[in-house]
Amino acid sequence: MDRRIRVRTGCITCRRRRVKCDEAKPACGRCRAANFECGGYNPPRSAEDSLRVPSRSPPQQASREGSSELGQDLAWRHMNWRMEELPLYHHFVTTTAVRLFRDDHIGFWRDQVAQMSYGVDIVYEALLAIGAMHRATLLSCKHQDQQGAAKMKVLGLKSYGKALHLLPNQLGQNSVPDVLATMAVLMLLAYFECFMENPKGAFGHLWAAIQLMRSSEERLSERDVANMVPIYDAMLRLDFLAQKFVPYASSSFLRFSDRAIMERPFWNRPAVEYSGMTTSDHIASEGFRQIQIICAHNTFSRVVWGCWSPISERPNRAELVGFYSEMQLWKANSPGTFQSCREPEVFQALDPKDVARYPIPPPACRFSCNDAALNLATGNCYLGCAVAMLSTNDPDPQPRELEAFSLVYQTLCIGAGLTGGDNANSAKPYKPCDAVNMGLSTLLYHSARRCYSVAWQRWIIDTLRDIGHEGLSNGFAMANTLDMMCQLQAKMNRNHPERLGLNAYLGPLRSRLIPLLMPVCEGGDVLAFYLRFGSTELDNDEDAVQVVAKASWKQGAEGVMQDVKVGVYDSVISDDIDLPLRPHAFDLFDSWRQAVHGGWHGYLSSNVREGFIKLPEAPFVSD
Image 1 (cartoon, rainbow, N blue to C red):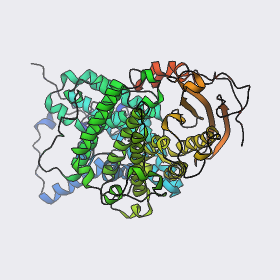
Image 2 (cartoon, one colour):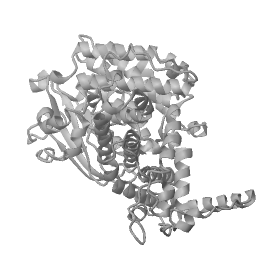
Image 3 (cartoon, rainbow, N blue to C red):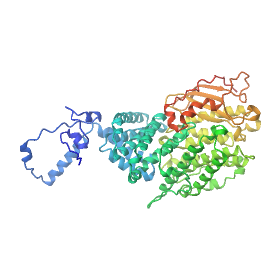
Image 4 (cartoon, rainbow, N blue to C red):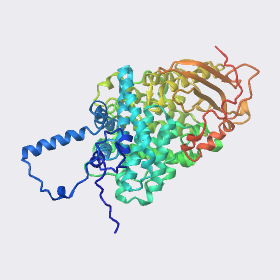
């Protein structure tokens, strides 16, 4: 029988931490790598020491000795541990875990993961890193304390670097507890990169966690799987964001998971319930189920990016109707989300036939739980996308278009409730600055094309600027992209004066511009394309999606556009007779689409600029 022999020759610090010591002298390498103060080594024991009878200490003396030993334990780390690291640890367990994770999963991240950090260095460093960066984000939000934010960011980067240094060794550990610890660390590091606005870094850590999960699934018991549910939930939510962040991408998480919970059909699988579930638990479960529906349909039928694809590659009518039906069933089976609405009369008063008279700014619709508000806004966004695609093939598109407009307006009302001034006084106000999952800005941005009028779009643009940075979602870049779209759209409609008023109907959804914002990396230029469906009258090809303009610009921290370059390739927008040949989106994005066809992880090794800068430049025609 293989027995593990306990060695007592390591340094005092490693023995107290119960980690393997390399016994280097005068200070061991393990302590130096973790920035610990090595306690040195005990002198060799003699035979007389082993025969000596220990004397009993009075209780008071024992208590003092225990207190002294505790003080020595607190002194393991470098001299500034209490000043620097303890506040970061405290911020994670009291604030970060509460803000980033589901209410019913907080216990896992706050208790189990924090307990792991006692003996596993990499967990401790990852926990400090995300705690520091979250604190930095909150301090920099609305310019509250830029100096304090900078200090927290430095501490976060320091711990992040240590965690990366320890990661290769941790990945070599194969026991189930080590796998659980590694997956938790990878998700914390992914969230760290979200706060750093580094999409490739965030999705790189997520992809590593997915691969580790895939390679370990066969060794996990049902109990192990149940214990990893909070990690699975975090992975699926970030995977969901990646699908919307990376153009034309599908899920990488569902494609690489064999769990029965991921199989079709989804709508007839009731949400998991257990005794003691609170309203917030039900809402979180309903949101998780909605994400499963959307991700799976996007994997099978490209429902997320259908509007940006030629008709030959879009979901067929049966697939769209199936998705529509499942989303309606999700609504019918999600009482927690809808019962959290404190002002249902706002939605009840909306008549799709009176959409032209919907007021702007929209009335605020408030929810008792922010997650419930985002659940409904997410459902409206993707349901509206499916309805818009159905309308393009209907003999009479008006009923579907009115439904799409109504869904967008509901999202505007939800946005007004989340970003309104009185929201700051609620028990848990919506704070876009520390969001890492799918937030309001992404949902508003993707709803802008389906707005009834320019007034709706202008309200979205102003709200996106007010939101600013929301994790990986850059509200400033989205607002600038839509602002440019409005300018180009006005030029397209110059021969339709009835569409040019602030509150005028913008025209059929099929004839509108489709904005495509490429992933924005920190320090890089913003790049956006503007597409439209071809028409028989103009192009002799109504199935193609064509690029009519391209825009790039540099963007400051507050979203100010600089060095703007716009190229127009369509005579519908420009009267210039020397326009370059208008490229087909299918050809332009062919290499990109091939890279992300099997999942968004293809984006990690792709250069965003490949193929795009080869477009012939064309001058933008000024007003």
